[in-house]
Length: 245
Image 1 (spheres, helix red, strand yellow):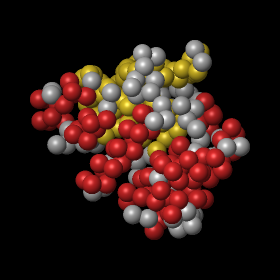
Image 2: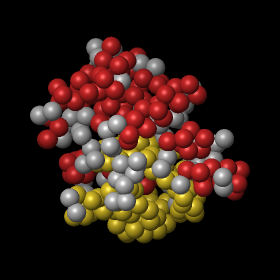
Image 3: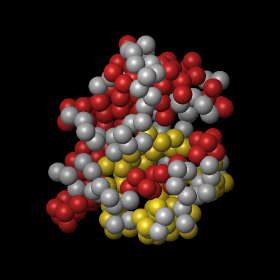
Image 4: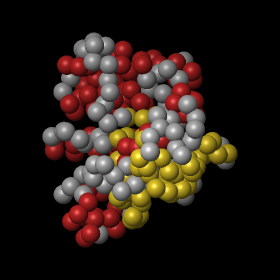
């Protein structure tokens, strides 16, 4: 379960593309060993926020500090490779695998971080235990996997860098309900068994509420509601207008 210590603290983060502002002063926290879910429909800024945290979009203003042994590492403005070295890994929307590389080769691409290179054999074994289907298909081209298997591979690739904070963008998108249930169970296991801290964007309220410790609702680039999973699930306005299910 989540501790009281914050791994990530975001204050008044603002960002956009060109002259179009997408994030309008976003503030939120992510607790250690928790699954925090950022909910909302498409086009409200969820993916942009994760891209800011991963260094793919440079914020115009605000702060995003990652806790590191009591000190705060400012992520805003850092390069992506520096953010990976600091302990943040992103599972992007659409998975973004290397389709003509094998499963194992995709996993090794995730071990680019200096400290992770030394542990790549150990981590490959761990990913095989967490995702047995990937171990069975390690020599198969990633582009020939099913949608669910590709999402598992995308998560496993991100885990190869031994992150302290895992960012997952829309993990259930385009997947069958039975696959979503299994995937959410795996994400829950990453918190419960491995003590990982996870920030995940989602549109699927019922599935997200099953594993979330805390959730935020984003509408038009602003946080409009924050609470635990039950509080969000019971919010009629949220369920009726903003979320799937």
